[in-house]
Length: 514
Image (cartoon, rainbow, N blue to C red; front, side, top):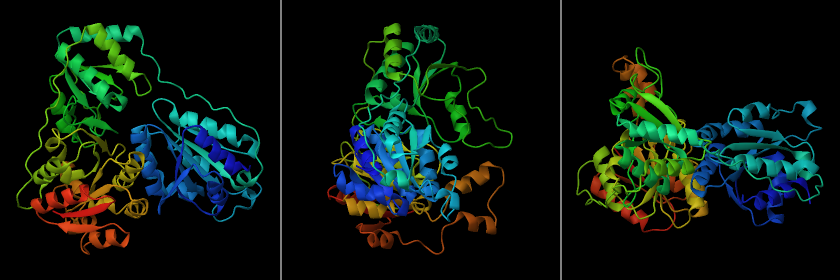
């Protein structure tokens, strides 16, 4: 058994049974080993940003890591933007990055680079395997690091000669580091704050946004007369009918300030103190009111599940909170598609158990409100702000959850970063509906220019913010990659095409001309 085979065998033993990759010459031993260890599912992405974004979507929904296979430093670099989003989402991922053979590094061949320095920017754990004898133990350590609380990126660099050399031994798997317990004194202190009667709010993120924890937070909020909020861009929010509905913080800083006005105590549960996405002249970076005290119940690495339960017990919060009622609106009957009718069309058609990957940016701002009463579903957001995650993350979510419909709400500008994901969806026959919102512009940047106090864009600035002409033909792009595609201009046509897509196996693309 060579090093590559040992690596794959150890991945499987550690519960990693999917590799998403874009390999090159230095990874051929790994590719060949996939036939020798056939239980590993292998999926090809045509660009590394698709590979890493799909691993992010998979990890968010599977609650375990996929492995990526990346070609040297340039391949890792191409995938870095979506690894940034995955790091912000606290997604478990094991990167396998091929490298030149150890004896070949000294010659500084054209593809030679400092892989470790690139990997460190997104990796909580990183190591280069220096011999085939170590590859099993190194792989086990990478899996443990990736699965450690609260979820991390681990990067294992695999020189070609380590992959082809004979490997021996059966490495013992390493237990991941569990979440840290929250001290009883912290529970008692926050319980006292919530008993004070002063206006309070819980701010949730991470694992606290799964259904059982949401119910606990709802019980606490009801008992303490406290609001229950969540981060602007959660990695995964379980929502819809029959679930406790949290209040999601808005995007713009001034709107967050308005949402928190009057709150005297903000309790963080797996969340961070709200700050502005960007700095603006004369505006604060920290968005918590000066009269509000911030208390941390549990950090991202803490056991927020046990902490919420302990806090509920300390408060005697036993009454069930009010859950979201089912409200499925009638489908729109005509008219142009706008943010409101877009949300209504999706709300009227979204199937039970769907997964929505939201990179709709400006055009989709009303969709979360319209879909609040839909059948139960999961909502995945752009956690790190690096656009181009929607189509790949939807691909990964579909790989993790066969049988569940995945909907990618994607801006046209963002779609062009990783449009190759459509090809992988077609090749794997994934149930993904990609809704491309075509406003022919980086519309959010027009808004941000005004918020900066720069006024309307001039002719040159407008050219830098518009993506037409030429008009991108998304229908032709989708069909060229094997995805049935259509274009709609009215809300009733959108609802009809959504229904058709949801009733049909495999991927489809709907361009919505705004």
